[in-house]
Amino acid sequence: MTCSPSRFLGSAALALLLLTGCATRPPADDPEALQEFRENNDPFEPTNRVMFDVNEAIDKAVLQPIAEAYRDLLPKPVRSGIRNVLGNLRTPTILAGDLLQGNVTRARETLGRFIVNSTIGIGGIVDVGRRYDVHGHSEDMGQTFAVWGAGEGFFMFVPLLGPTTARDLVGFAIDVYTNPQSLIGQGQILDVWNYTRIGMTVVDTREALLEPLDMVRKTSLDPYATLRSAYRQRRSFEILNKDGPGGAVAPAGGVGFGQGVLEPQ
Amino acid sequence: MQRMLLPRRLLLASLAGILAVPARAQQMDISRATNFVDRAGQDLVNAINDQRLNQSQRRDKVASILRSAIDIEGTGRFILGRYVRQASPAELQDYLKLFDEIIIRNLSSRFGEYRGVKFSLGRSQQRTEEDALVSTLVERPSTPPFTLDWRVAEINGQPKVVDVIAEGTSLRLTTRSEYSAVVQRNGGRVGALLDAMRGQIAQLAAREGG
Image (cartoon, rainbow over all chains, first blue to last red):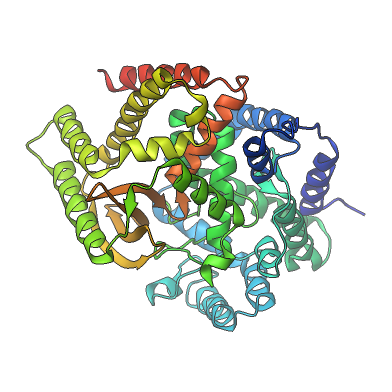
């Protein structure tokens, strides 16, 4: 059996779960420190910080330059089209999320957008739904677990995927494994297609994060702590379906840097 | 309902904030808060788009508007959180001065880049008994619009901004995590945070050229 790219990503993420070291619990006579320790819920902080540094190194050497070149080389309409196509391809995950959360209105929007954008929008290149004020939104299994009442679990930082939590990482793995595009069979063409899709998603997401991450690196005294907090806040916001009128068009899903992915600049 | 769904962490954090700021906040009237944000926001937009000002003049103008609109001391204390009591009086005084400089520099350099910005009031809602959350929509040429929520509290009889929330991410909660991590990773010393803040101000000043 060939190892499909999505399966590889999932296994790599799970392997990271096992490679962890522990944070020191504050003494019991300091209730405020203990409370903060519980709120941070980051028992593997030392390992996470190493992973964060690894990610920073990879990012500065490879991902960020690629994302910058991508922005410089391709005109905005092309990048916008690519982002729209990727967002459209996430429809099965988003629709499943809407339905599993019992949100019929949003499910109808998702399905309507998919039909209109895939046909009139030429395979999702043009976001026709948006022009009629039916904006895209994000959903993923991590959010569905949260709506069902699951806690977020401990915090994790996974190189290439970014900040996440136990709940969101499990959700992400389920989203990857159940994606129809990784289920419909095997073969070279499909593998190439999946690698292309995942590669484009990474580049597109990183391009959307160019300014926000620059800002964090420039202004934060502890970028790791800033991203940990921003990720959690952003997730609560997404779970409550409070996305603004800017609208996330190709949401990063269960992982991301505490940022919605908007229209390209 | 919405409040029930909010993570406990947020509630605890705001509770800790209320305890840290000794009963200065009074009931905030929602229309008063909205008018205040509208006025301060228009002042900011006018200063940012004023063609007659050069970059440093614009930054100064933006800084002075921000300084009068934001409750810098209360926000600074909220962000320092439990370390307010661990800091010596001299450290606390230093911290508030450094915090003032960092927040004003960061916000004015960020807003200063928003040439051609437009802003409008969105739906606004009362959030807690002490403060109001006023939602605005910020539009810039060639970038997608985004929502910016302003948390406004009545401080000594004046409405003041106590937090800015961009697409769900609160500046004061994020900064609080950041500062707390710096103190913790340096053996619980507030002095280490002050050193880091001084270093940051030096960097910001070098980048701005003054």
